[in-house]
Length: 187
Ligand SMILES: Cc1cc2nc3c(=O)[nH]c(=O)nc-3n(C[C@H](O)[C@H](O)[C@H](O)COP(=O)(O)O)c2cc1C
Image (cartoon, rainbow, N blue to C red):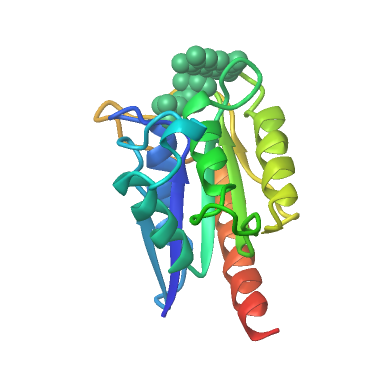
């Protein structure tokens, strides 16, 4: 089995970005399991609380290590991405043991963005890609997908309902990502 973990750049209880993550599951094959990495308890990063790492941080690092690939769903905040996600990435970027070399996030990663407005969060998506690239990740470059006017995709029960074109983009992207992950692990 291939284990994919999702990181949602929002800790909102009813995050629409989380609904996008959940929707990706539909397009993976039966060989894939998808789980979200929950990080609401991760504290604000400071060198003062870095060692020993808080339990919530240990859990996130373990979950990432056990994953064959990661999906980041990035909501646009002020033409960028959220502070909670940057805080999490800062934790991930630091060694578990003081003095160890900087960890490399040697994982295949898919980044998808969302926005309430018309941009689709592509600036935020690009910024997250840039940081993950800096950390040594292997990012699926093409195809890319983003969801503009994301609240308009919620039906009256607040379920995410994609029009055929958006569903097609997501399907193509998720399928390409599964191939990318498989290729990464057979290299
Ligand atoms: C602090 C903040 C800043 C935001 N800035 C933008 C923005 O610049 N452009 C935009 O289209 N939406 C903006 N939004 C709306 C979010 O993009 C939208 O709520 C998000 O895609 C939904 O994510 P979530 O439900 O997963 O938290 C902002 C929301 C917040 C809370």
